[in-house]
Image 1: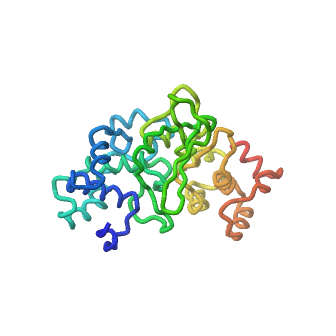
Image 2: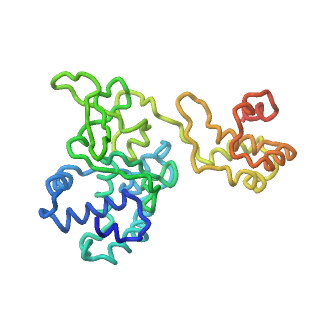
Length: 304
């Protein structure tokens, strides 16, 4: 804690917690006040998150929402570029024998999968490795809560029976309904799709269709779909939407297309006169009334 108070390194809370846990587990060892919990994680919780998979294993995710951007090579590069400089500059806290990608990713996987009250940030929708650099100062988590982190997730609200509240400086756990003796306790880790559950927690729920699943469309797929009906050459199309494009778009099971996606499609298909009017308006997302009214643009979006 003293090191991070003195440090000016712009790193995320998840990164701070990961490095702190590495020091407590591998340097302080049994002298650490958190040794029983950390030793339990090290000896019993060997997670297998996609961020540490081999390229051959990642090939099995092709065609799914989990297959978008990250590779093991990128994880190693981020470790060398972001993590190693801090470790090398402070060998008393992180000696050479623990300056390894494997140890770091293993500890980070515990923070990702068992942390509460601290949302992780990912550079793009499909990245496997969370952002390690500075995040919002209003974010105080994540926190690791022994015992509570043993409660499993369910994507179905009727199965939830436990909730976590923060009251003053205390974490308070309550049952939200009567629970029969011997019943499994469930809570929600968030409204996560199967792809998000796999990326962050290392599991998917089998047997039922997850109500939070989404169809993920990449910007390249979006541009390709618009190509046959678009106006102008490819360079002109990209110039129109370069400040509007997102790396990926999540389309919910309802089939309702995100306004940001529709805006990109419509801008690509606009006549030069309409595009100039849109450009001069400084809008980033077109309104619902625009999409709903019977217009040439609306018809073209339907065709696309």
